[in-house]
Image 1: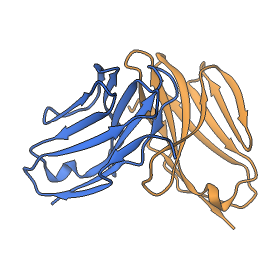
Image 2: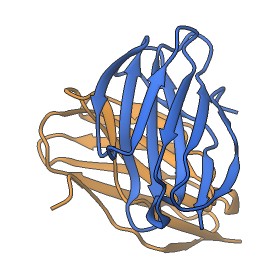
Image 3: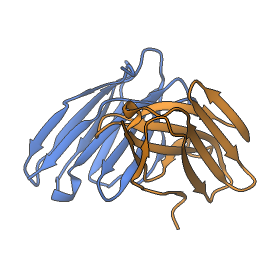
Amino acid sequence: QKEVEQDPGPLSVPEGAIVSLNCTYSNSAFQYFMWYRQYSRKGPELLMYTYSSGNKEDGRFTAQVDKSSKYISLFIRDSQPSDSATYLCAIMDTGRRALTFGSGTRLQVQP
Amino acid sequence: DSGVTQTPKHLITATGQRVTLRCSPRSGDLSVYWYQQSLDQGLQFLIHYYNGEERAKGNILERFSAQQFPDLHSELNLSSLELGDSALYFCASSQGSGNTIYFGEGSWLTVV
């Protein structure tokens, strides 16, 4: 079993839709949770960072963490074609201080 | 632009050869991380340096080594290259250990 599981998609939605991206993890030592966006093999771009259970909002993006279920989510409201990319969840191991990534979900927003 | 600079952007080399990838972290960042991204393995953590000292190792092969210099730039050395080493190699940096981590644009290595 991988430490971080993420549905690879692809996920195709119409412009304006609400997108839900999810990851599950197995290691309770994970304490910090991040979402990255990656365009066609470019460098991953940090979107959201949180370390506690609950919701964190930034513009059209909301990150949600449920530590009891070991489940994290990213919601994108009013999705745009420019949101088409691969979204990677990343979780930090407080021991190694290194990120463990999910496999990434490829999102396509259709105009 | 994340502020993390990686060179070269692309390189093609033959099996058995050795290459060096270079990374300049964001101004003020003391931590440097190296990651490998291949099609079948996703993003894999290789190694973490903090202010010149190795802090953690991930799935880094013995043929690979890294170091962080006093000016905080870092180099990843890949030797005895094999076809399977073809991948995108990312450098990332953060202020300390555990802070938000920012990635460079990567060095695309092709081994032929």
